Amino acid sequence: RSSNMVMQKKLCLVSLLLLEIKLGSGQYEEAVRLEGSDRGLVLEYFAALSGEPLALLAMGTRHLHGRGVPKSCVAALEYYQAAADFVPSLGPPPPLALMKQNQITGADLVLKSSGGAKTKKKEILRYYKYMSEQGETDAQYALGHLYYYGGRGMSQNFDKAFALFEEAARKGNNLNAASYYGHMLSLGIGCQANNTEAQTWLQKAIRANAKENQALAMTSLALLELKKKADTEQAQKFLQVASELGHPDAMYNLALFQLGWNFSLSVTENEHVLFSPSQKKNLANQMKTRKKQTKSSFQLLSVASQSGQLQASKMLGKMYAQGALGVQRSCPLAVSNLKLVAERGPWIFELKKAYDSFRHGDYTNSLYIYKKFAEAGYELAQLNAALLEHKINDNLHQALRLYQLAADQSNPDALLAIGHIHFRHLLNYDLAAKFFISSYQFGRNAEAAFYLGFLYQTGLGIHKDWHLAKRHYQLAAQLNPLEGTWPSRLGLIFLYLDPFLSPSFLSMLLHPQQYHTIFPPTSSHDIFLQINQLLASTHHDHLLIISLLTLLLLLLSTRLFYFMSPRSPQRRNYYDR
Image (cartoon, rainbow, N blue to C red; front, side, top):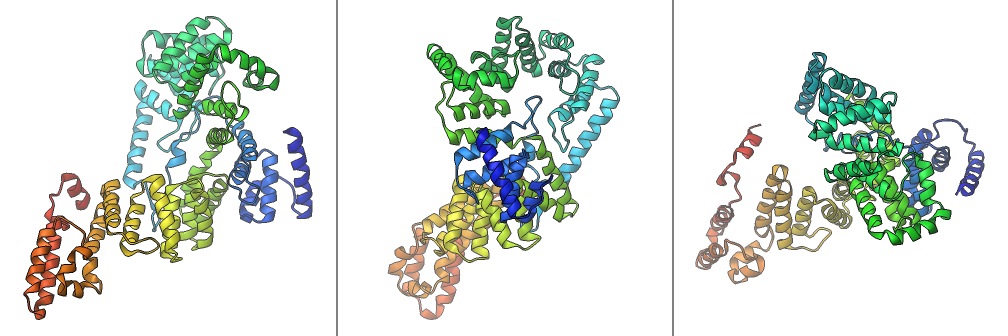
């Protein structure tokens, strides 16, 4: 691997010289500005080889989807693994909310989070800060918790979190704060590590049965015992109890303990023992004798990974990559796990800067930051950058390219947006139908269901089917009752009116025996039979009046008017607002 990287670096240097690109810091930023040109690709390549995390992610994404480079899962795995190594192993990762919130949405760039919600968040934070200054330990613990994990618009700050936990634990004897205080002391997060002091506070929290954070205290104390190689039996018991309480860190460390991890050694030294070729045969023989324990370890790692424990995801990725510890080699699964880890590095806090720039009207800076992360494979950044290109810069070509990046990752919002562009702007109904179907399949998207209802009704880009049109209109209302009810009602109205608006309406009135081939069976079947019998004995001068009566009876019988249905308090409040 190292010789391969050296050869790539030499080839890249030659390419740089041929393209007359100056070397220096910030190659990836320059590559983003060049927007996919040959010069930009070479700069991005060199930035990755130089160890820039976002450039490593970008090259991994390129090789994974074959964009501008050969499609290769193995090459993608190498880049994602290198990027994952930059993610700190100590302390909680940046909050997952940064990957999901702050999405710009809507044709007029309406933000998802309302101003009232933001005001409420600020009021809560102001209250916590004020009560913390007054010495209220519960407020100090709550504020420390926010600083520790990040949330409610606050960035992680381990120093502030440690100071608040310490004050609440020492002065106020807050046992929940004591668990975090001991935990941070044991790992040296936001402070100088002090195992003796940490052990005292963790034992205090466990003895007092601080249920909310008892699992955290047990896990931290178990790790201290395992590092000292003191009471491994008690440590294992603590990890098992904490795992049963659902603590992801406990599951991860219990799995490592079962695999023979030496907690007094570094991660690199342990991985060398577990994954080195010289040790592989020896470990394979051991795995046969303790097959059940190995299966249990794998299950613990899987559950911990699903609960957001990044180190568990990283371990699973390496197991799949090497085909070690009883796991069959699988490049796609290895990439999936390592990509998850690499995307949660501390650099993602820059996404919040992009969102703040957008809110303050600095669209240029916001778009630039989002593009950096879009090229690195972040779906949120791809969607936001595409929307800014489309609605602010009116650049449909770039918007489609960025939406496609997210669509390659099966993002339902991106698939919907591409379908919408083909439907409204490019008038390619065949492609629009395909993207709407994909959006509905991957995300059960209400808007995609509505568009499919319309396409099935009109036969644009897809075969005409009355029943499927009705079904998709109803699905749109079911999937999003608040926003999808009225559009689906209107769609159903036009669906039922469709025969009356078509040229065949007059012939239908003059030949009522063909009624069953035009209208599908509905609850209004008897009403329509009576109307048809009346039409057979009616003078043609009265056809217009009869038509209007038919429409009225149809609408009343199917109860499509909203005022005919009871209004629930929830709906009344919504429409009153």
